[in-house]
Amino acid sequence: MPNIDTSLNKSVMVLLSEEEKVVFLKALLKLSTQDGHVDENEIKYIKKMAQRYKVINVQKIFINTPEQIFLNELKILKNRRAALELIKEMFRLGHTDQSLGDEEILFIGRVAEALGIETKKIEQISSWVIDFLILQEQGRIIFEEESK
Image (tube, rainbow, N blue to C red; front, side):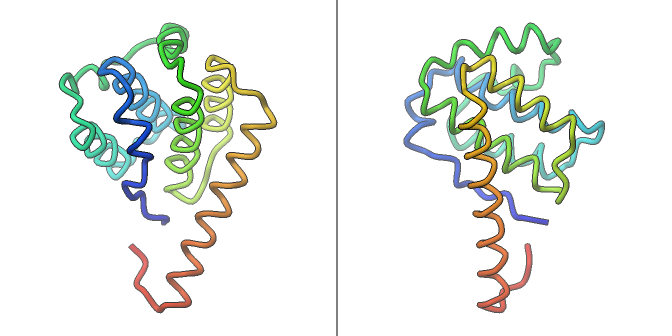
């Protein structure tokens, strides 16, 4: 299983308001529920990110919001770089269990559409994440590191 590390782009996150951070992390949480199974590592990652980026009202992340309302909430993310970072993190999180399912892909697509991100850009980000994860794993093999 690929390691979810904390390489979330700090320079982007520090520019976000509390509300934007909550919706960003809530998107990751909602993605983790799309396959019907919430992995404990995914929850730990989201909590760790909330702590790292000083989210004050962490419980707001875990409020179950109907998808359509949530997609409207996403519109608070006006910063395109933050929106692109969110899509990247969603793909990374989706790959943690070695299988990015159809439900997860469709959800990422709906999030991207709500954020105004074009299909070509989504495909580029997806390919980049896959290449990144492959290189990470190759590095572990080459340098004889244990998988995390």
